[in-house]
Image 1: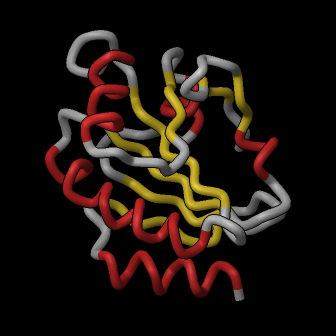
Image 2: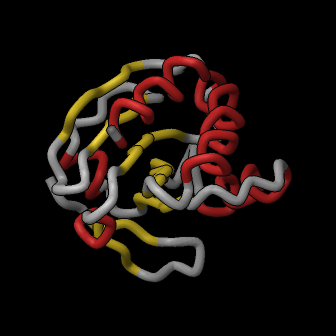
Length: 135
């Protein structure tokens, strides 16, 4: 399913604009301890696979616990370069029926969901799932 989020420059981006390459879609928030812990694993995977896989790290903005400023500060403080998008209208969260985070979807190049991992994903599992996605 498609959705619209904002990039770091606050331009609208759709998930479907990323089709053509496999996609790792992660839903997270900076207040979520497991999300914070796994983020470094995603950054490491991004550095290895960025030419072959689209990484879509969707930050769930609720305007209270999570704000655009808090999320951007988390990214900046940790020097993350992985692409982060902001779900300011809850379009992505609603479309994917997100009830708990973190959650990661593995989507093939044509936009079909191949696998889902609920909770903090171990780095070895993340790498295995990405390897399976690009095969």
